[in-house]
Structure formats: structure tokens, C-alpha cells
Length: 65
Length: 256
Image 1 (cartoon, rainbow over the protein chains, first blue to last red):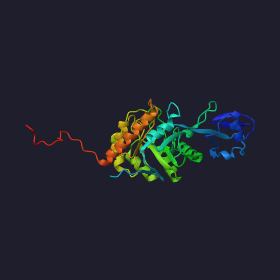
Image 2: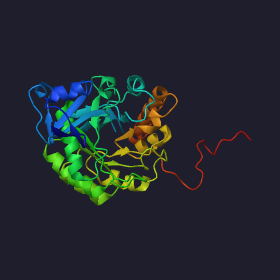
Image 3: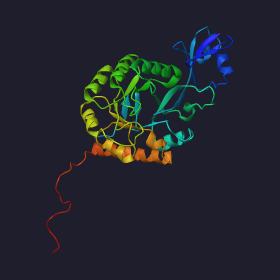
Image 4: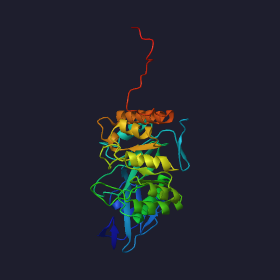
């Protein structure tokens, strides 16, 4: 299955948002997920399964002025 | 005049120094700086996560009670700024947003036109909008009409530490704006922050000068004192300069 993660196309097994996050070894604290331009709350990460060509953004707050 | 608090949207600030989280040698320096400076609002930025590195959550270093001011840095037009603002609010950062739309990568000059467009949209959506702009009076009046909670003119290019190069233009905004004027960007020294406050700015936003000091905590305190001094001096009404001398002591009754 092809999805676009932070602007880059990736191929991988079908998965939920939570599984993708775990597979990438990301800390969930402070992680912000946007799927096809819609914010997905942490509680929904388990339930939402990614579909072919979904565009997912994995974001976080960083230092900035 | 009384030194009252600053109201932005539904939030009241007693401290008029706003700070930023960029450029600190370590995030662990941020809580001490916030305590020493008394700053009640601090900026953060939103970025794609680096999936190859273990990143810290900057929000863990900002104590409760300090208001978050997410910025839209990275946005090159109004649409991108609006998207970042919506994400920041959805992510729990509150209603404040600093609109920063930049296409000029040498001087990081804000795009005033796109900033106005983003302000119109976000103010309608209930954001407390703080637009970072070049000091331009007609634009500032349009931002006011669009619902901006304040205007944030630059003193000098971001991170340049050059101080109030746009002083006379900022003075025009202070004279004519109904909304607070917060000097953002370019302030490199506490004396420059004091100068901004002396001329009637409602607050200043300082990041680089504090974050890159050898001792950010001490520099935060220095800026706090400077902002307070400048504010008190403004309210006390400064004496006018004159070309000639005016004796401070009586010119009669000399002892010779």
C-alpha cells in the first residue's frame, strides 16, 4: 500500500495511524497527526486505517520565535 | 497614567515581555528563562517530525500558566498560514496565533498582503490573531478592521539584533492604532526594548537576544527590567529634549 508521509511516498503493509506511528518508533507525546488535511485526535489513531494514497503529516511543536 | 495590564483577546497579561522558544542551546534553559523574565506568553513553531531522530516535545518545557503563541513560520502564503493555525489550535495550543508569512529568505520580510488575508480568515474563526508585519499604517488599520488583536511590527529583520531601525514608522502605528502595538523582531538589547516601551509600544517580543545569550536566564531578567522601566517612563511622560541647556539648579544665590 502506498501512502504519502510528510510529503514522501512510502510503500508498506496496511495499517492504522497508531501502527504507523509505532512502526516509525515515534514518541506519541507531542505528536500531531494530520490526515488528508484534517487533524486526527490521538484517541482516533487506533481506529483509523490508512487507505491507498492517503496523505499523512506527522508534526510536532518545536522551538521558534 | 496607571500601569494596567495588557488585554489580548480574552487573556490579560501583567508582563509586557513576550518571548520565544527558538535558538536555545537546550530546551532545559526555557523554564528558568521564563521564571526569571516573568514572561507570560511564548512562541512555538510547528514542523514535520524528523522520523530519523528522537525529538523532544518543546511543550514539556513551558510551564502551565504561560500562554502559548504558535507561529505560522514556514507559511509562504495565507492559505498555508491558515492551515498551520488550525492545526495548532486543534492540537491544543489555544486560540492565539502569530501570523508569519515569509517569502523573502534573505531578510525574512513578512508578506503584508498575505498576512492580511490570513488575519481576515482566522479572526473570523475566533483566533486571537497577532500578525507580524512591516510597520505600515494603512495595513495596520486594515488589520484592525479585520479583527487582529494587535499588530506586531518588526524593529529590524528577524534575529538581526539591530534594534529599532523602523522606529519612526512604529511611532506612527502607536499614534494611530486602536489595537495594541507589539514590537517583534530585531530587538537585540534590553536598552532597545526599553526604547520601544518608552515610545509607547504595548509590549515587545524577544527571542534571539535572550535565547542566544551566554546566560538566557539573566538576559531574560534584564529584558524584563528594561521593559518595565520603559513602560513606567512612558506612563510618567518623558521630558522633551531641547537644543540648549536648561539649568537644573537655581541660577541665583551663588556663594561668590
